[in-house]
Image 1 (tube, rainbow, N blue to C red):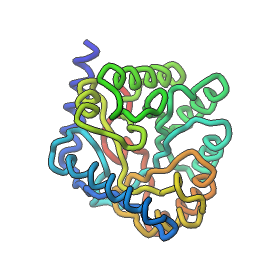
Image 2: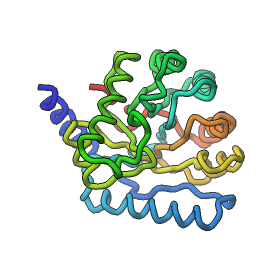
Image 3: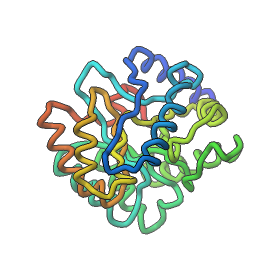
Image 4: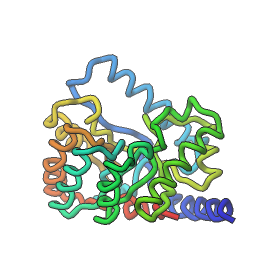
Length: 258
């Protein structure tokens, strides 16, 4: 019965998302990146987007509706002791709801409070696997275990079982996508990489996001000090340019929890 529910949810979300214009392009650049990193990003983006664009990968989301000036903030790798709380404080000040893709193994006794807080304050707490491995290095049973354990931990703390997930490092292949889809989950990537994971200069992160923003963008950020320093400026500058921040499920028009 649970598997049937997952499959029904998957089909429903595919139908809802089918009519949204797709970008098929992941942006994010900075003159502070060296040539090797720039080349690595270009190769990964092309390799990832091509099978999505061709239809080989089903139920993989990169962006929202490109006809409206709506965007969504997403944060990977929470929770931690300090940065997650700082991000929540900033989001609360600006009255914005975001999506946090969280790692199950770090939701320990120390960090459970901030996980619950994120959920209670209206943010999405979503699946980023249990131990943050490259799923492309795992077999089907281990991929399933990573997703199930993280989702169960999230449900235990928040009361919600997430059906949206993001693969660590954005690493996907046919086996990963097939396994995820079989379990009724939806893969959510991003269309704008803030580069906060490689740039330690918050001003460069702000410039990258503001100069590359497009309608429907899903913005990738992380729970690190650079993102904390950059977040307020990103929100203020994009709001001034007429963009509206929506929660990820609202941007995509799909369910986040089963």
